[in-house]
Image (tube, rainbow, N blue to C red):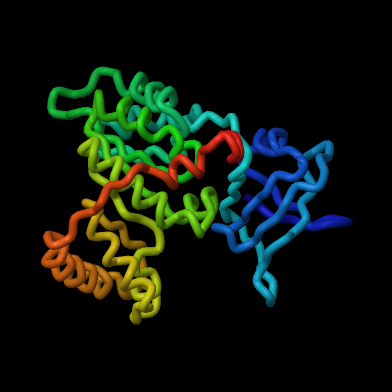
Length: 274
């Protein structure tokens, strides 16, 4: 997204303009990983008019390339662009894994698999898939997505908790990420625990208490992703130490693996359509 100001209200552009045409009056819009909350109040010739409903007390400047989330809108946007398909010819010859962002359905996984079915050099295997689960729609269709992907290629799931928290609501994230872990365990699909793990430590050199609790939960995943920062080496060392200590406790615990109630509640008939 890019911001600019002319006469009248500030204007914010979207890198995929077709998204704006799909928004309806009343739809929520979240900006910059949920830092700013807005709602569509009117449709215009070149977009929509937003009313800001939530922002930091001292305000927040919207900078270039910040994300937009539309949790209650079932966007019809192709996850694979023409540029993506051009790049795949290079990727399959040099990469071991392909990260698939904002994958919405099994049908879109199949499209990627069709593009990967091109001849490869004898010394190259087809890259594995990392499915980034970032939206309500992806969570709703995760069982079919896993079946489609893992039936043909080595597959992992990344719980991309930044966008996912905005999409499902922060109050539901803990339950939903837990149930995604259960589902992937049942399907024998490894999970990558991602987004803002030990971010304060990596950036400032000192972890918060909340970060330490978050790292303990990461022990249930097969992989943890850390973001870059001047203290990234210290973050890796602490992560390794905490996870080794937590593994000594996990054998004493037995998850109940109850029915996926949060999943059912989130996607019940009363919930917003996906």
